[in-house]
Amino acid sequence: MAADATTGDIRESDVDEHHDEQAAPKGAIARALDAVPRLLASKAHIAWLFVLFVWIVLLAAVAPDLVSARTELILGNYTNVTSAIGACIAAGGTVTAVHHLRRQSRISEQRLKLEQERHAIAKQSHEMLRELHASQLGGATGAQDA
Image (cartoon, rainbow, N blue to C red; front, side, top):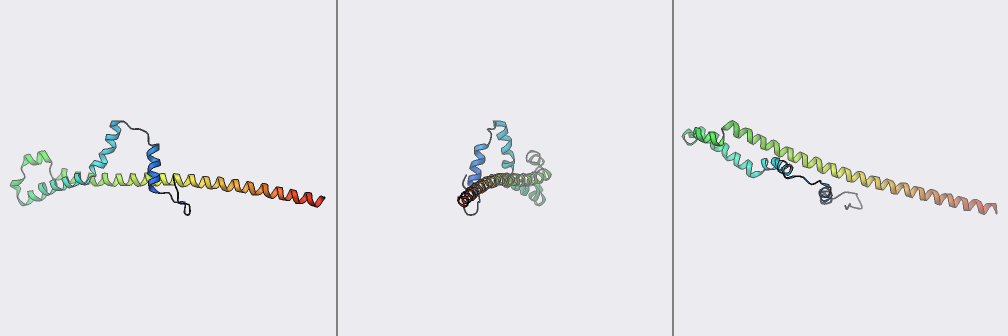
């Protein structure tokens, strides 16, 4: 875990590597469920839903004969398509928010560790200065007594 010596900033790559090392292994079902929001928010899925929206809603308004009831039954009607697009947008926002919150949490943890280390070093140096000062006072008193 490397930090910039002048500012104490932690590089994002270091935080991501550290998080990957601490992550507990997940089962296949848990990994599959974790992938659902990312799949819903993928550009390919949103593009497919947009094509469906154009085909079912806009094309049906212009040329109703091109979109049959069977097509709507199989691919969904305008309500299903628009709600699916909304779900994709929400999933994308959630994925982004969770990513940023986890990253901020990891960075905050690392900053706390750095502050604790800095505090320990400052405390140790203070103790050493106190001992040095005490030994110098003891030496000066002994020289005056002689």
